[in-house]
Amino acid sequence: MPTILNSKLNYYASNPNARRLLAGVGIVFVLYLIFGTETSRSLLDVGSSSTRIAPKIQHNYADGLDTPLNVSQWGERAIKVRQLTQWADLAVKNPAAERKAFQNALQTEFPFLAGTDSLIYTPWSASAKQFSSQVGMVICTGSNNFHLAAHLIASLRRVHKSKLPIEIAYSGDNDLKPEHRTFLQNLESGISFIDLLDRFPYAHDELLNGGWAMKPFALLASSYTKAMLVDADAIFLTSPDSIFDINPGLHRTGTLFFHDRAALGGGDERRFWVKDQIAAAQIEPSHYLSTESLFYSGKTWYEADSGVTAMDKSRPDVLMGLIFATWMNTKTVRDEVSYKVFYGDKETFWVAMELSAVDYFFQPWYAGTMGTITKEDGQPEQMDLKSTKVEICGTHMLHLDHLGQTPFWINGGIYEHKEDPSTGYSTMTHYWVGETSDIRLTQPQWYWVNGNTGCLRETGVRVIPDHIRKNIEKIESEATRVDGLIRNM
Ligand SMILES: *[C@@H]1O[C@H](CO)[C@@H](O)[C@H](O)[C@H]1NC(C)=O
Image 1: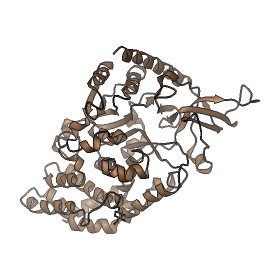
Image 2 (image 1 turned 60 degrees about the vertical axis):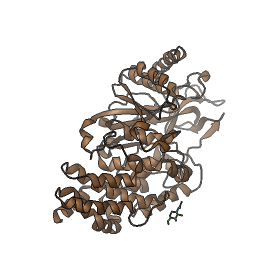
Image 3 (image 1 turned 90 degrees about the vertical axis):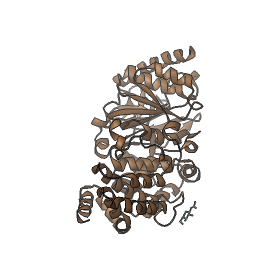
Image 4 (image 1 turned 135 degrees about the vertical axis):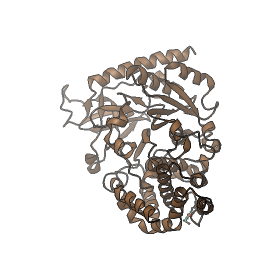
């Protein structure tokens, strides 16, 4: 018992979240006394006592810490998630220990994991070694947008020479038809498929016609421990292959999130919802949330654009956060809470990390735009864009690379309007991404033209660098080639 406690305390001392966790030390410690130590013992004593103790732990979890939690009680549930994470850590560190009770508790809390034992990667399971520690990409796509996934894949392989293995996740033949899978399979090398209905045998209600909700399931199902979840309509402007090596925040935390546009959309209810859940989780808001987030200070209505998300699932705390985010996208929870409070899956990834007290990383710039500028009457041909306000309009949200220097990826595909190929390829000559510190003081004034063209009048508009411009031209010709192949299918 004392050694276990010591190792727990060392864990706290070496953990950057120690302070936040200690803030909630009251309840966590009480929970720990109630069954944390029992948990540890059941994992560490491989002898007969484990069979005696295990059912009790399972019982505690099944009871939902004595009171059943409803779908709105994310904070209270996060306390259980943190408890499960400590248990998971012990399971990873003690490979010989009995882990059935832990797995049962996990599946009681998250029933969509039932039957996934050897099918999806978890660092605590006996099958962990069967999965590759390589970096892999997973793309969710259905027959309605497989052509966008095809553009993405062709541009990755042929423009950026990307060697990342690519998995395509879908929910059954009605979602992504067999002929469309065959097409994608033959398009490039290194493509494989994940039918989420096979990987999550007890989650069909969650997955069928799940739309956005499939995304966290796809990230969980990725065979690669370091996985990047990418929307079918994302387009990379430079290679994403080395992201796990070169992005310092991803390297440090095992997570990478991108921001949405900073724009106001509603009242304070979203951030107050998050605030209440943090209080219920018995922690303090993270340093990030309280000092950097524009969302939490009421300066934007959206925090995250989940078009590209990366996680290192070999870290038990990160994977447990992902499992929590997946729960937020299960049918009842999303219908009754998540998609009412927020918009789709977008915010669930970071909210899950925040409530679980996992250190997570947001690229520090809010999304900008890529498109064309319109000069006003009287504005000279040569202008100092740094100090002169010009109008920039575009249909693509833009994200920068890890240095904040170079356009990295856009959403919305390569067409001007992703739903309508007849609009042709987007004309892109300029881009704008604001500094977060400036946005904190002055909101960018987005206005909308023809529905989905976002415009701004801003200083600091830049010309797209030549090498990116060349990549865009190559991506357009790949898309033209792919569209030809699709027409002849
Ligand atoms: C969930 O439980 C909390 C606390 O008892 C309560 O305030 C809330 O209204 C409940 N929500 C739902 C959807 O039942």
